[in-house]
Image 1 (tube, rainbow, N blue to C red):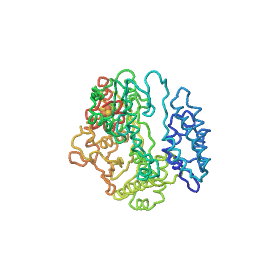
Image 2: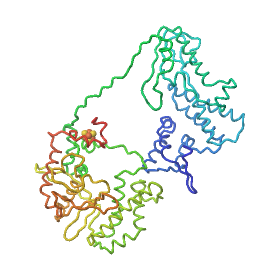
Image 3: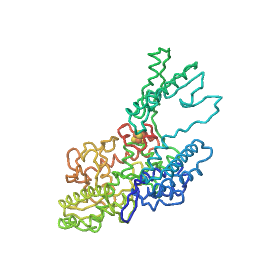
Image 4: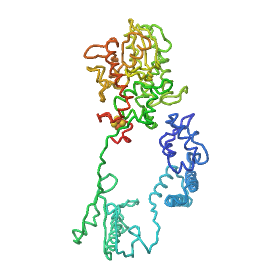
Length: 576
Ligand code: SF4
């Protein structure tokens, strides 16, 4: 962690991952308590990928834990004080951990004594390496009553002892004989010539102890793990082959495996009764703040059960801190920048000349980008944050999308910009008399040639392009369902209901960054220029879908198309 410190003239910061890993450590949480939780929350809330070191100095334990060691002596004092503080928090009943800590302290003291005896100008890094090596070589013995019961011991501890029953677990070839690490600077050849011990002597000692242990034993169990993995050798010990082929000892061989039986997956469904029904009915209550949105309706169409988990129970994915920009953050930044650019021109005619000026105004576009990044990516709105590395790269990409959109608008100009990020709260009346609360946020509303254009920006991949042949496709669960069309039609329907205007629905969809966006829908190979031409069919199907959603006799069931489950955040609880 000390190596992750990044220093510049004004600041000293540390990369967030080792800091969070330490703060999540149970003993650190015990020792630092509330301060560790608060610090972790602050880092996550503000997306501090580089954490200023002064922020880490909270309370005695965290101040020590995150202190900077600049000398070898300082590093040894650091480890010894940390071990001392941890000793006070590890409960006495946790004997194993206390034993580990005891041997750790012993290693620190040993290193201190050795360095005192041989004063050397060591670098801090060397101290870390020496301590790691020392701690890595420590073996912690199990304690027990040597004359009764099961004895767990290493091979060397069995010397001069006889047992009726011997069980050797880990009878793998790297454990018996134990794989030797060459810790000496003297090469093998020289050791051999001068009669110094080599790994062959060590193998011979293991061999002697193994065969001696078998001499008086009545029953011997040799257990080895045949699973193949990169960490362990899956081969049986060479002593087994010696026993079997050289000494021809009769042995009974058995393969033991866990029986893994996959549990039969019962389909999951939730009836709309009791509390579930009550929560659902809030969407029909004019005075409640429960509203359906285009994405919640899309969730329901894709999988009613996922709607139940997310929109009725209110479950959501845990927000993991990550430097990688999520698609929704990317989209939010783009939306925010476009909104900031167009906001000053509300109800004004946007001409080609004006758009040329906007495109040339790099300072304005950059400052819109910076403030959108501060708000959505760094989660520190109104702060001036310097972008570097990954964030700078993403900012360049978003800027390209913004410029593409502005160039495209220039081709469409002149038009009147009516509104951006327009919120509409309303109710949709269903044929059965129910009224459903709905809230939509329309990305942009323009007026051109006597038509109101509803514009939805899509920076991500549009599922199936903007073409469809059957209106029922919009309401049939499938990963290829053109959900963007369902969404823009919903906006058009609500806008018409509210303002009684003729609407042209458009989606600015960027197939590739180098292309200008596609905007028009095509239904049965005909371009949809007016929403009114499809309104009746669309609204009939939408309302029947909403009636089904609120029908108490239709439970929330799993989607039939398992492709929809691929990226579902509830897949673990759903056991699909
Ligand atoms: S895992 Fe599949 S069936 Fe289960 S809630 Fe998610 S989408 Fe629905």
